[in-house]
Length: 322
Ligand code: GLU
Image (cartoon, rainbow, N blue to C red):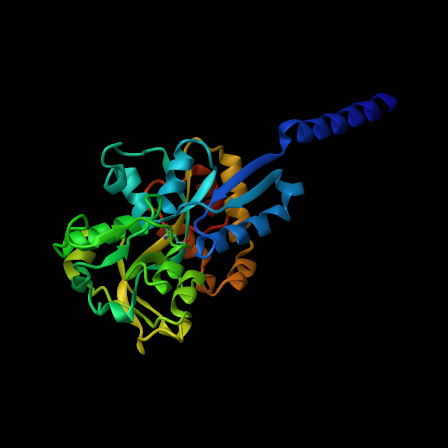
């Protein structure tokens, strides 16, 4: 009797020790600029996960970063556990295309789930006279910082239109969070931001004294056909009442996805996937862009690269895979 009690105490002690001495795992989630939507996703994930730390042993932090490309590279370098990425950037990295053409296929990259939809959003000053993308010749356009997802989108689009981004216009490489102010100050004529709507940065850009409009990216059939991760979407003008446009603006979009590395342990990814999917109601409430999140879609739609086994385990357990 006495002996059994002692063994039990010893066990409790051991468990407590292992929790303290490294039992608590830290997981950083890479997001984007603070005025984008990724940052909001990261905050939502952090909030729902850190309520369950006692149960999962996992402490989550969401960090502001340069965006998709920066997140993927940080994950692959082992500096971050997870990150948010555009589906196209994720696909490019895995296949060794676009940004990763020189480095080659990043086959350790894994998808966890898909998230909200994003739209390649082109915002210009009305005074610039730009009505269509072909009007950018001779203008100054912020195509985005090198770690962002929008940069490659802008380059792909201009290339498909036969516009040389080194010669035909002045391409700036600033962060999306800086673009609204410099657009309003008149230092640039427009900027690209691939983002979910509504986004604080776009609200800021359309709320200044300088009138601002969205430029459509016509659903170029060949473009959509060539890149399977692109879908036709529209910028909802109701989100931005001060923009010049009166109707939703057609453009191209893709899903945002949550990605990780094959090197991250199964239990961590399992707990994160479970924590996110089982708290979707609360995540949906945090931002309008998350309203449409659906567990079954999130489990299935992002799988254009291999899924992490921790996510797979949760989806099978929850019966979310067909
Ligand atoms: N799609 C952007 C990027 O990959 C980030 C958008 C956001 O932060 O919501 O850089």
